[in-house]
Length: 212
Image (tube, rainbow, N blue to C red; front, side, top):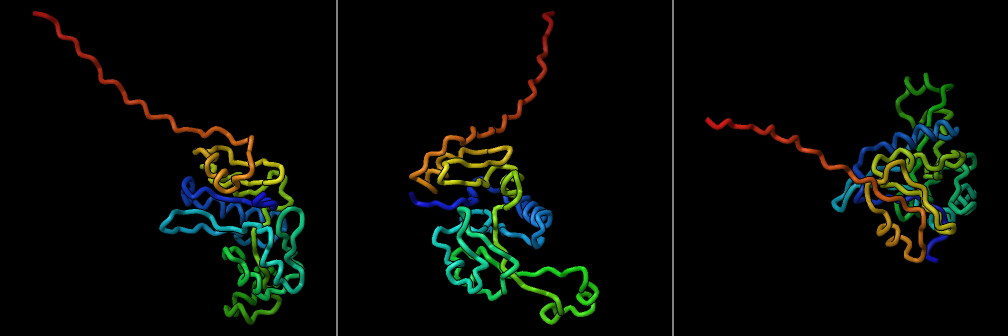
């Protein structure tokens, strides 16, 4: 089998770069008690538009270089323990996808100091840690980005159980895309695409002529 970890992937042909996934990511991170920072970034490239986020690598280069064990392979993914992260940035260098960033959040206790001293690097009480996709761990409905995607471009994939989670509407055929990603896995729960109904053109009124 080509992959064993669960992950979220995007079909770039279906992505419309609406940023709904980014907003949902930040909102649900806050609800789950995490730093309210985005854990994915919508990229606009010549080849297309799509969110970039952690691929949950089976070999996890980021976990291999983490000096504190904050990044580790567990529960079929690459977990991040924010409490013991020291913000050393080694994981950002090791990540082949650029899917990990170092960021921080100002707690309310130092907000007045932030407003007085704009040089954030010198403010007391600020701890920078690694930020990466954790597939909304603790959220019963699964990754929030998948649930809010208006086109169904984002998919949560479990290669072991051969099951996926999709958005409410899937406006394209994901079967060829998933087959290209995981050729050795046969997914049985791929929904039929919701096709847009063509607009009906109003018929022109018929005119009748009376014979004189």
